[in-house]
Figure 1: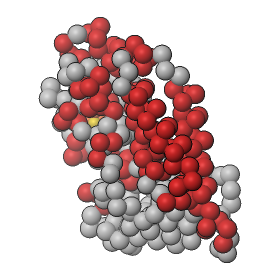
Figure 2 (figure 1 turned 180 degrees about the horizontal axis):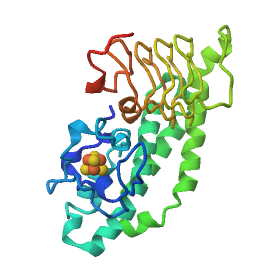
Figure 3 (figure 1 turned 45 degrees about the horizontal axis):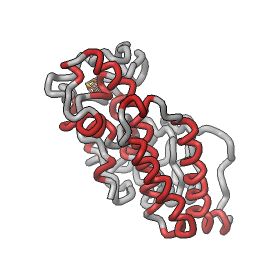
Figure 4 (figure 1 turned 120 degrees about the horizontal axis):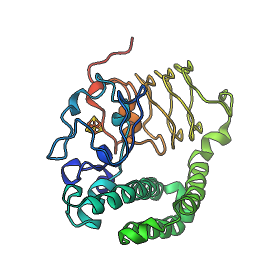
Length: 274
Ligand code: SF4
């Protein structure tokens, strides 16, 4: 369902590892300017330390997802012409890539919204927005640089908020369970074992939050920062707008339940609930 909206590093020119700037922090061990290739990027455009990213402090790389923009920019927009071969070309490509990445992220969310029966009443609007977004990704580089991404994102967001509202409506309406305090971020919060069905975690900072054994079905995670969050034994089976990169950046185990379109990261395996 989401296969064309997943990164395919083998068909990308390592764009996220070159185009984006990184600052020395808990997420990246050294400074790197935008347009400067990461020292760990190989000439075949793959990462030489891919299996060691977490242990070596590259948490930002683990939690990054291009949603398929990398291969699209490399193979469709620039027709397979590598940035190494033309520096002037390269600068433009590095500016186009993050814009297209944002468009592909919107496509991923719209695609999920289109799969839900709860959104039937506005499927036509979702489909139209999906197609308009696809059209933007098919423009020429100079046209892409002219796109008002913020305005387009606002239009997409209105539909995604409407999706969240109707998708979580049955649980919000029941209102039987004690709800957690609204309007707060949850950095390091202890939410272990709670019934958090249908909660709205939109854009929340949930870094290192303890969500182990919590019921997170139908919770909306769009834009939530789950780096280091403990999801061991949690149930996220019907979680909304939960991405692979969010899952990758958290801790889970074989008992964690996740939506079918996502994969359990290898670092989750063989971790039992403590
Ligand atoms: S560490 Fe690997 S994944 Fe991260 S930016 Fe460098 S080459 Fe890319």
